[in-house]
Length: 224
Length: 100
Image (cartoon, rainbow over all chains, first blue to last red; front, side):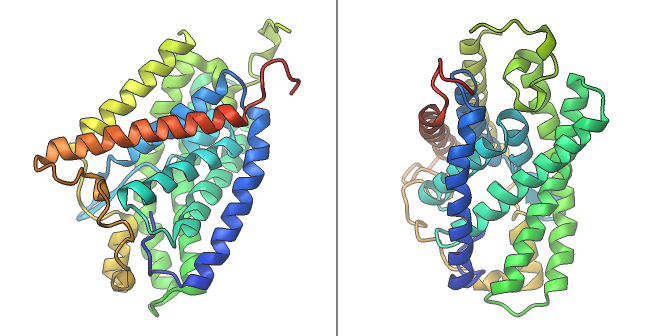
């Protein structure tokens, strides 16, 4: 869902770049509380893993592919602020080094993937956590469901940008229907990868997982 | 699992995915590209400013072998992302000893 230069006009791109920059600034502050000596390296690893898996396009329908977005994965592993930073770093490197996503469209893509997808994931994940049993498997399942919805949410956010400032005049409702239809399918792949990856981290180092913290706080021995 | 082993396994898995598995990824257009083609607004896309870059489109310029070219680009990307993001998160983190 990396937006190339030219799809959206410059004023709209600049406005979303300003919003994204503000969100990154807030996230730099917010991430401090969730990152310590142990979780900061996990956040780095999360960004690295997302970069790697974003290279792996999987087929979703005839002539269409999709790849992991990673917003739900990062949100559950390291919290929403660090997730915003991780995804923004990935998008920045992809645009600068690999010509994947336009530079003028970076703010648009960051808004959709590093902000909208992250906070939608956050809302869904923590709502589900309240309902579901406090187990590792339900934590992984909640991450998967958040992932499933985060992808069409980011797609809808692109359609909003298209409606505001597209350089084309095709109907917004046609773009919306096509974007949601395709990205629900990509969301299924997103859900499976997120479920598996969160499950793997929970199995080896559940103590590092942001979305699982507090589940066993009563058993924890805290060293000063 | 020890922190060090956990981080090393995750990093090696990322290197393997970007360096080896990426060659087998689907080359079909992604969701947004496909929608843009089907609806017709793909023509408004401009060429990427970095389209002539040494690593553009996940290939190393001048490396003919596609498997090698994609794999090397993936490895470079994983190392770059790893170094830059871990560096940033270590700078941002609460230093040990400070209260939450």
